[in-house]
Every structure is written in C-alpha cells, then in structure tokens.
Amino acid sequence: MAYILAPSILGADFSRLGEEVEAVSEAGAEYIHLDVMDGTFVPSISFGMPVIQSLRSRTDKVFDVHMMVEEPGRYIEDVKKAGADLICVHAEACRHLDRTLHQIKEAGCMAGIALNPATPVNVLEYVLPEADMVLIMSVNPGFGGQKFIPYAVEKIKKVRRMVLERGLNTDIQVDGGVTPDNADELLRAGANILVAGSAVFHGDARANVRTFLEIFRNCSRKA
Ligand code: DX5
Ligand code: ZN
Image (cartoon, rainbow, N blue to C red; front, side, top):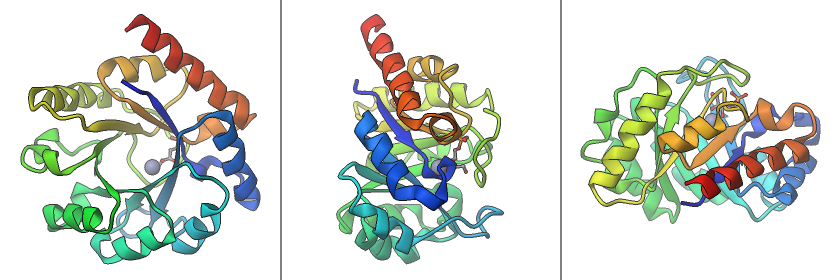
C-alpha cells in the first residue's frame, strides 16, 4: 500500500503560506491538508475558500480539505471551485451523511468521512462503500499541537478490518498529534495517510517531510 504524508497547513507560518506549501510539495508530500473551521462545529475559526484558492496555483498536489463545519453540504460546490480534490466531512456534522457524500462525488471530488475521537466506527456500517477515505481523528478537532489520543489506534485497526472484510480499498487517514515517533505504529495499525501539522511545520519543514518519508520507506520494506 502506498503511504502518503498530508502536511496540515494549520501548523505553518500563515504570513508565508505559499512558500510553506511549495516547500513541503517539493520535499515529497503528496497531499496538502487544509483545515476549514467554522467556529460552531469546532471552537476555532481558521480559513476558507479564498485562502484555498490562492494556494491552488502554488502546487499540483492533492488538496485534501478537512471540513470542520456544521452541514458542510452547503459549501461543497464552493470548496470544489476553490481547488479541492478531496473533501472530508464529519459524520457528526451531517444530518444526511449519505446525501453529502453523493454531493461531493457529483462535484467531481473524492469523498472522505471524518470521525471524532468519541464517535464509534459503526456509523460507517452502511456508508463505507460511498467513501474514498475515512479520517480517524486522534485529537478533538479544532486546534493543532494537541496530544495524540491512544485509543485512536484501536479505531484505525477496526476500520482497516471493515475495509478488508468488504473487499474495499478505502484510504484510512489519521489526524492529530501525529509525529515521527508514532508514525510507524499508525501505519502498522492500518492507516495509509498521515496528517501532520506541528511535526512538519515547526522547524525545518523540508527535513521533517523527509523524516516521515524515510519512515514510510522502512515500513514498506518490513511489510
Ligand atoms: C485539528 C486539525 C489537524 C491539525 C493537526 O483539528 O484537524 O489537521 O492541524 O495538527 P497537529 O499535527 O499539530 O496535531
Ligand atoms: Zn485536519
């Protein structure tokens, strides 16, 4: 399985976002993780469509938009137009999750379902085949730089089991408190896309990306 690093720009220096995105793209990150927060679904407000759109010309990497927004179905078209390739919505924020996933696919994007730490994986039972990706949150969403919640590992294993049992090839992403120290464990548990904000952008972003990519190479070699 291909392992992917998705640097979260929430951890970047916002005064030089374009350069930060270029740096991690050149260093080998395949996805750029963009955290949209509405101040209602999560306590904080981050950025929205104009920021995504202005970064679009800086890289051709996959724009992975994590919508921490109530009823994100209202914004799918706009987020797509701003440059999203993958739109990930929270199961807890969608009254009609199935409909929202279809809206995302009709807009021509890959669709992801995000689960808060306290949300059981059984909400995926019927909609799993509609998703290209499941995002297991390993912190309560809303802020970068929080501590990894250990029981997320068990959830990743459960979702990987569900995906395999059904013969699907759904990607499993993990987001929150991901570092080079827990990366190997997360890949072994069944995640294949790691989101990292502080662990990439605090310090030398290019070198930090290369550290993760080296862990990916070692893990594939051992697998
Ligand atoms: C948190 C966001 C994350 C955040 C991760 O709500 O969804 O993407 O940027 O930051 P770190 O890697 O610092 O935990
Ligand atoms: Zn995120």
